Image (cartoon, rainbow, N blue to C red; front, side, top):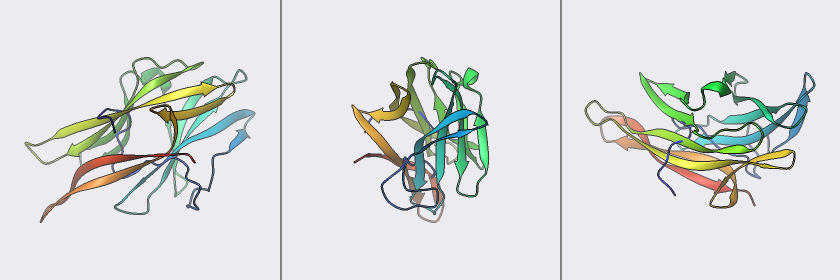
Length: 179
């Protein structure tokens, strides 16, 4: 696993596995208000049963128009792609940006290198962030997240716990691949 920065989400971030879960068992394309939407990623964690799907909305040329996450409670968060170079916080807990997504080379017609930055340790005086790098790729009219040339199916966040303190951050991110 590369140490990089892409999405900053406490224990949430998984990409569709071929197993049953609260948000559905596979990626789907669908249309809402005449816009095609594609599920890219499902995020999970080892701390609780929270899940979040990450979805791109495409225009008539299948270019990415917008991006949002939807959690297992049905709550949606829309992200402004014009600010992706500055990064947007995907998860914030106790005054810490836990997971942040950013890209220095995002292009809505052909993709990007994505950095997912996560809080490794949030204790006062010991604050440390780490990151992983992934690729957002276009294959014809379809989009996917990949790592090391393989299609990613899930990001699973493993919490970092300290005795008598509890969860202080994310120890690692498991990148799981599509079958």
